[in-house]
Figure 1 (cartoon, helix red, strand yellow):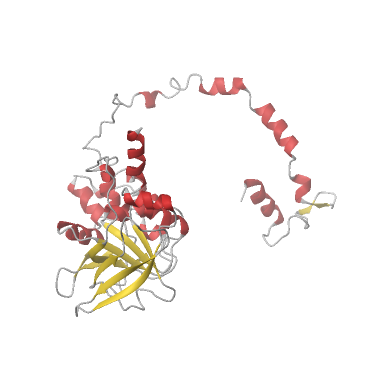
Figure 2: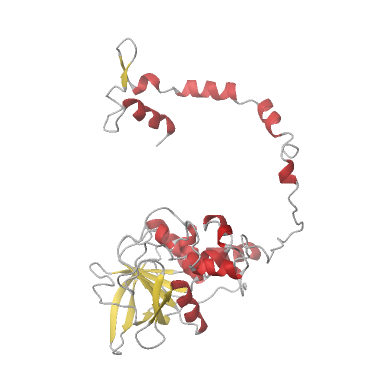
Length: 347
């Protein structure tokens, strides 16, 4: 809502009002006053802008900008064509999105032998997924910072350290209110690591790192409206950096689905009426996604194969939520970042 409308509703004292017909109130003579009486015309706005904004105003404010900020000028800065990353910094760290980069894009292949990192219900928002708020001393991010010699009083917040992937990845899926159905009755970023047996409970980050040691691909399974809420870039970045290859949900929020593709994570949608709960999944299963190839087309149906602890296999149809041809290119390249870089270097 625009600020003038906020003021108008405040003057009216209620939001249940038709501003095109109902008065906001009465003036001191008792006459009814409407929004149209207060709202400026385009000509009035144009006149005010022209009288308030002059070239001289900008010259006065910005001509000596550097001299007006001596503290800013005291900050040492490196020079050159390539940014010099400071390995001692715990606020800014070189992200791994271009590790092992080459000019050749990858190949679209089937995902086999994947393990579940998390199974979630409906309405998991980007605030549940993305790192936010204070960093707890007992969290993976807190333990990492302490290993760097940083005291808890100096942890600051995830938002202040959003330029450091080593902190942010540890905070992905670590919201204190997120409920992983693989660990019933718990809240927070915990899961079960299934190497063998019934599974060992640990943080989602620790489990992801253990699976990475054996190059096991990971999947996230969820219900309806996965990724709803604000568009948090780290909700998709952190998912990718944890090693998640696919997110399989009953439905997606529009922007987060697009962000997943942009980070090279495959979004898949269950058929109507199918959810992780209806399938009876507990996270001990092994998943394979078949039907993926260079010939895939937007929104086509492929297959999710599920192998349970009893080694019985089930096949479930899932919809490929790569919705456009350009998104197929993004996915083939491993995400929009390597796609754009290859485009720039090729020119």
